[in-house]
Image 1 (cartoon, rainbow, N blue to C red):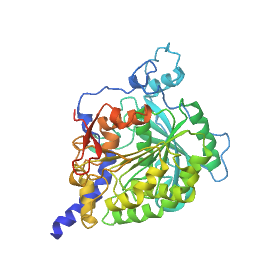
Image 2: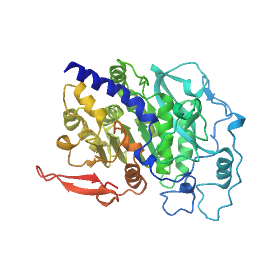
Image 3: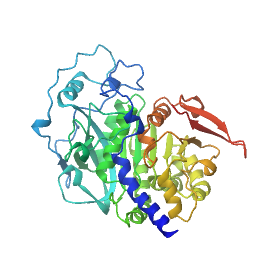
Image 4: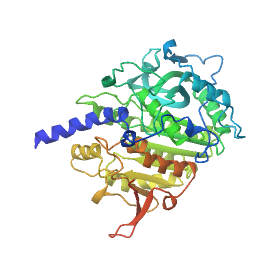
Length: 438
């Protein structure tokens, strides 16, 4: 019926906005009050004891046309706390003065690199530097604050029902600085960061529908922090409108398609101009279309980069299932050493997308539409996300974050990872994996 179709479209429009502010289902369970313990070098569970530098190593002089945008920190927000005791470990990844500074200020500082084809607004406030329409490709570095009280899987933001009407870095994940640089300047700083990582690692995150630039930066920092990723975090932000209107979904679809060539160029730059030995590509929802088509373009234009990417991770891919199977999956397998696809039957955002697209299955569907292919690890995440839409489990459900942490941090194949159970599909004998329910 028409009213049902209209209702599902409204759900889809609401979906993107709800996902970024929502906490995972695990947030309602008992969790540590601070993530500081998790990054202590002496913690044997850490993949790599790592924390973001205490400041950005920006050049003394900005390139012509550069922008430095900041969100000032009010004095009232600075929380004095006792300094941490000196660590006796010999691991160099977390320096004492950085821990002391985090303890004093009440939050960690995470540096993330970016490329974007959004328009410049001319604003200097960090949250407003980039807009929601098309622009030229630009690059830079962001600094994000993550509170010491951060919970794994959460993207803390002000909540009106808690009488929070402004961002506070001691409580929320906050974009504080945006430093626009040339690609040459970004590449130099990327290489400096990568050279300090034990495995010369980098990951590139591509966001999905209804995501503003600031929220792409915040999500990238949260993923980096929660995975304790030993390397350089990078994100590509295409011009999603980042707001809820009746036309925002089609607007975002159009701009996602327009962005394929921009991300293709960005991936080639990262693959050829940086010292990263291991490059992980991660995309969510509509962003998987941008990434998959960009990777296909890389393979067509630069076949010498075959297997250049260590891992491609597609989370809740909002891609026509048949297009994915016939056109995109072969290119992903060609470009990467391994490809992982996360799907869920609980994903109500994809259910709505399927209805909007004439009832055709999406690549992130599970159940009878679960895609199982040779040379791609399919992970059925049904049941891990109890949120309203069940769409953002890749960054919010602790069980999925743990799985990605083992995949990226320990290079464990799917059959050896803690949270997965191997299954065989009766129809064709192909294997896939199911996330264990806690």
